[in-house]
Length: 303
Image (tube, rainbow, N blue to C red; front, top):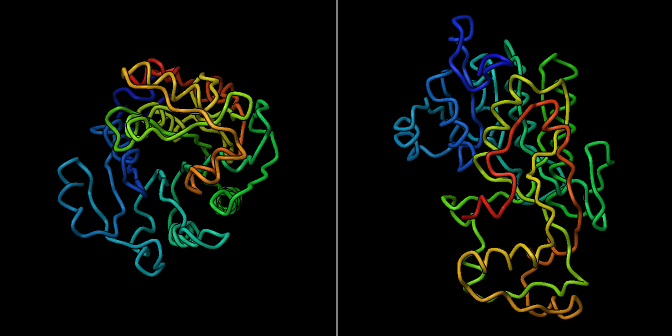
């Protein structure tokens, strides 16, 4: 991933010693590794010793460390020339000590040239269905999104103070047929209701492979401390998304219920997503990162 002309092509000689550290090597992290296989040396932080053989089998060098224990991360200092940080914050509090611990370790020695942080579109909060570009002020409405807002600020300050070119990707719902829980099929089989059309909210999506490509490209093309919405071109309400998937899979469409009755029938996590409505603008992603989506709509990506 070495040049603006061929960001996913063969590496020129001067880039052959690049070392990419992936922090948060779950589904998307492994897709990033697959994109970069053979182009850079791949390093992966893991807290699970039992995953080391799996990581090696996929061409990554595992590094044992725990984001919750800062001292265990000191070995990361000076190792990587590029970093992709996809690890989630803890599930409590309003801050993200994991990101703080990682950045503290990376500051100890020669720092990477660039970094990508995977955030969430939830930092925008409820926008009542409006179109949202990256210039929109953040207004996180849930503790989950507040933790991401905190982490974004930490990453941007790190970039500004150190000269590291850090990009922040704001990510909506991730889907892919080969991703665990990556399609609505299981929910459709359960018959989980969706909101009536007049009560429904807009939702945004990105195919996991396109997200991985965005992470890779941003390492080389992302502007310093720049935020990018990373989403496809779909502009669907949540219920329409599930109707589309039901038709595609030959399953019954989910029942529709009024918002006032939703609390009695739906889990709290799902309700929290139904309280926020926005349509994300992806122009900056296309113009600056020059990412051409392989899956511009969920209709093609779910099939």
